Image 1 (tube, rainbow, N blue to C red):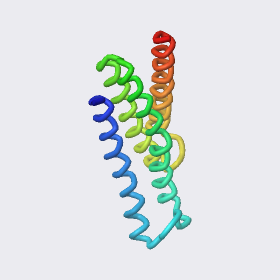
Image 2: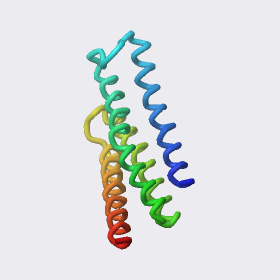
Image 3: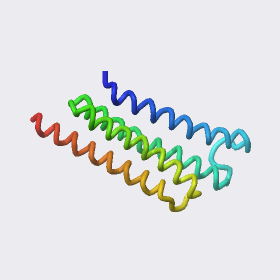
Length: 131
């Protein structure tokens, strides 16, 4: 079993459900069935959740491939915790910045991209070495 990936997949799943619950709570409270109800704060909640959904699958897939390819647990944990924390930073920053600029949003995005790109490079190197 890919234990390290299982850990970070589970943490990301909990974060995604939390972010989804924020959207659901707003929609139920304001009786908005779909969309944002032209409410800026809900638009931000929806984008925070959607952004996590957009980036998390590829990062976790790359982490899984790296784990199955034999990358050390130390590196897997570095990538996993960095990605998870980047998503927390991003969610906080996008919310606190009310959709505008915020250091949490900046660092969350940057770290997410760095982790995804680094894992892509690691996986490519592992494939080339295996050929």
